[in-house]
Image 1 (cartoon, helix red, strand yellow):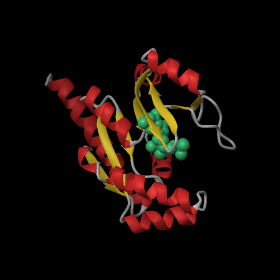
Image 2: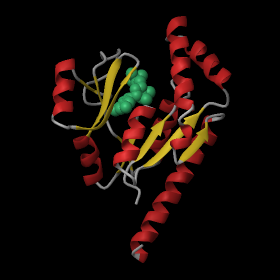
Image 3: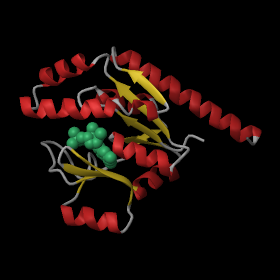
Amino acid sequence: MLELLVISGPSGVGKGTIINRLISSHPTLSLAVSATTRQPRTGEVDGTHYYFMNDDEFDHAIQNELFIEWAPVHQYRYGTLRREVLRIQNSGKLPLLEIDTDGAMQVKKNFPNATLLFIEPPSLQSLIDRLYQRGTETDDQISRRVQVAQIELSRKAYYNFVVVNDIVENAVTSVLEIIEQLQQSSSSHLTTGD
Ligand code: 5GP
């Protein structure tokens, strides 16, 4: 049964654009709002983009097992709140988790029915070019992100599906086809009692 959809991919691969399009074209998908210890960026709203927590609040949430997964990413900590996933599932929707590969491996272990999807750049060089074009990071930050990207790319074999983001429309179509297929097969399992 399709109970959770995880999407990962290296920084700069275009996950954000793909996810925004998925959410607007697929009414049963709902993005789970993560918690993070990083500061809000301009325009980010607490509870909409992230639940912003200080270190003590994050520690408290870990101790009380409020996360289904959490991981350090680029100097900060990020985690998926169990109550956020339950809220989406109870509303009859499919929770979409946009999380890093460490977090995805924890979800894979603890939720065997979760579907993991990895968004891959056409090449490492295209990712580097995109990070430079974006212009939001310094050269040092870009080289760190490229190192992390190489680690993330080496984990794609653990995902159920890998979609290459060469042309964004094609990538969105591929992901939508995957979701439809999974939803059809879970409803046929329900009706056949598999
Ligand atoms: P940003 O700080 O740019 O919003 O997010 C950086 C990265 O943190 C994202 O690309 C995503 O992979 C990761 N991330 C966001 N939320 C979560 C989460 O709840 N858990 C984990 N493990 N990673 C997350």
